[in-house]
Image (cartoon, rainbow, N blue to C red; front, top):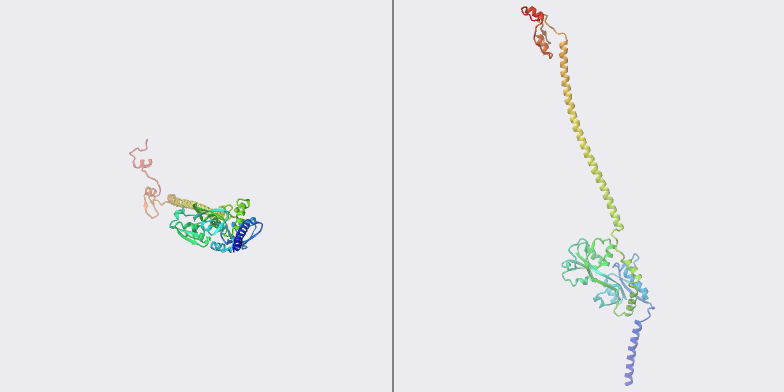
Amino acid sequence: MIAFKKIKQYLISLSIAVFFLATTFSLYADESDPIRVKVAVLNNFPPQYSTSDAGEPQGFAIDIIEEIARLANLEIEYLVKNNWEEMFDALRTEQADLIPNQGITDRRKELFEFTRPVETFPVSIFTRVNEKAISTIQSLNAKNVAVVKLNIGEMIVKDYPEIIVQKYEHIEDALFGLLSGNSDALIYPEPVLWKLAMQARLEDKIKVVGDPIIEIRRAISVAKNNQVLLKRLDSAVGKLVGSEKYQIIYKRWYGSPTPFWTVEKIVAFMTSLLVIIIFGMAFWRYRSTMSLNNSLQKQIAKREIAEQKLKQANETLEKKVDERTRHLQDALEKVKTLRGLLPICMHCKKIRDDKGYWNQMEAYIHKHSDVEFSHSICSDCAKKYYPDMDLYND
């Protein structure tokens, strides 16, 4: 009986020793042995995850995990999921072995193990570009604030009960909820939303207000019981982060912001400028034509006034000429009358006019000319009628 107990204790001790040896061996196994892993990724969470035209996963997280796989001797099989909840469920139920890039939070630490961070980015408040009233998270009280389910924004707003939370399944829906005015603000990781906005050509419609609410470290996550995979991944992350290869991948997906003067904006600006120039020239031509027309109208008006005055002067001159002509004709007729044959009495010397009346010579001549008579006496008549007066002796 005693011997049996000793054998039983020996077997238990041996089992414990074998377990610890196996565990130790697995933790420090040769990393040259390839491990096949299933990687859960999102179909659309740029720049971390997206899908190429060929239907293949792509993005910053994809390039990082593929480089990690090369360093850690892993063979990858992708499982594409529609949202974060599906991805988390896949890792919890061991359908997937890892998630290549997700934010580290206290809640997630309870569910998963994380490698050292592969990147850090800020979570900020986004508003429409013309918004003036919002500047801090405190100014969001009583405002409609959009967040994406299971994203860090949903966790942040829980500490602010005065905020009216609007939850969306996808970031695209949340962004257009903001742009449409349904939401007053959107809380989301900056690089991801900027990348999405630039792809949709909407970066000039939104802006970040205030300082980042929080900075989130992002890392590769694995299931709690998968220490072997975690060790390989963490070692590879330490080699990759900060290397030249990491910088190339980072610049590829984040790179420099899209410059303000894109080809589309230049074309639109030049088109607008051309339209403005054309309308400007048309307006200048119109103004010039109107100015010339007004000048011609004024000249025509002056000419008409001058012609009117000339016509009036001509009419006045014609009237004067006609009047003068009549006067001259009258005078000429009078001269002709005086020069013509005058019937005169042979005794009293009266002259007969055209109407048959006899007129004194002096009256007739005065009537038909400008001659004035002054009466005198000739020498013969003086001798005849006034012999007693010696009027001409001197």
